[in-house]
Amino acid sequence: KNQVEQSPQSLIILEGKNCTLQCNYTVSPFSNLRWYKQDTGRGPVSLTIMTFSENTKSNGRYTATLDADTKQSSLHITASQLSDSASYICVVNWVDSSYKLIFGSGTRLLVRP
Amino acid sequence: ETGVTQTPRHLVMGMTNKKSLKCEQHLGHNAMYWYKQSAKKPLELMFVYNFKEQTENNSVPSRFSPECPNSSHLFLHLHTLQPEDSALYLCASSQEGQGNPYEQYFGPGTRLTVT
Image (cartoon, rainbow over all chains, first blue to last red; front, top):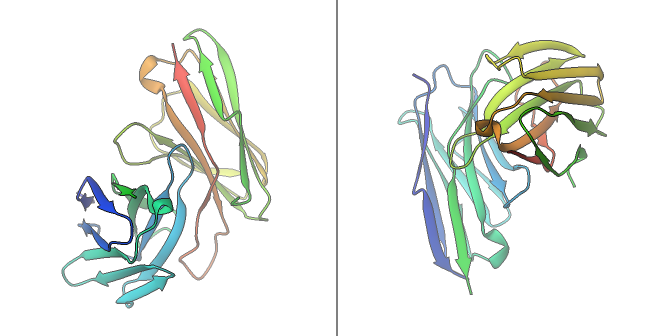
C-alpha cells in the first residue's frame, strides 16, 4: 500500500534553534517528493520539489534531502523563526500521473520565543 | 497570495441545506482540484478537472457535486451533508502537460461546519 509517514507528529523548539523533520514513504513507482508548509487555517505552500535523481534542495533556511534507495526524506530548518510555526507536509507523486499525490499527515512545528 | 482564491472562507450549514463553494485561479492553469482536509488526517483528493473535463472522482459521495464551467473557475455544490463532512476544503490548480513535476498552488480553503 502506498503510504507516506512523517515523524515526529509534533515538535516544539526555541527560536533560533535548528530542527529536522522526517518522511518515510513506500510509494512505488516514484516520480518526485514535495515538502509543503501549511499555516493554521491556510492552504499548503510549496517549499521544495525533488525528483528521484536529486539528493538535496534548498529554499532559504529550508533544506530538503532525499534518499531514493531507502525511501527517506528530511526537511532541515535552520535558525528557526516564530513564523516557521506551521504544519509541514511531505507529499510523494506517483510516476504515472502528475496529480496523483500521496500526502503525509504532517508534522506540527511550534517555535517559541 | 498564491493566485487561487476561495469563497466563502467559513461556512456553517445544517444537514438539509444546499450551499456551494467557489474557487477561482488567476494563474492561467489548465487543471483544478478539490481536496478535503479533516483534523489530523492527510489531505484527500476529491475531484480533478483537466481542461474543464473531470478526470478523477475519488469515490466521493454524491452529496458533493463539482462543476467546472471554465478553466479558471471551480465549484463544489453541497447538499444533505453529514456532520463528518465538516472539514477544510481546499482548491488547487496546476499547469499540466509534459515535463512533470508541476507544482500545485492551493487556495486558503473554506472551513465548513455541518450542524
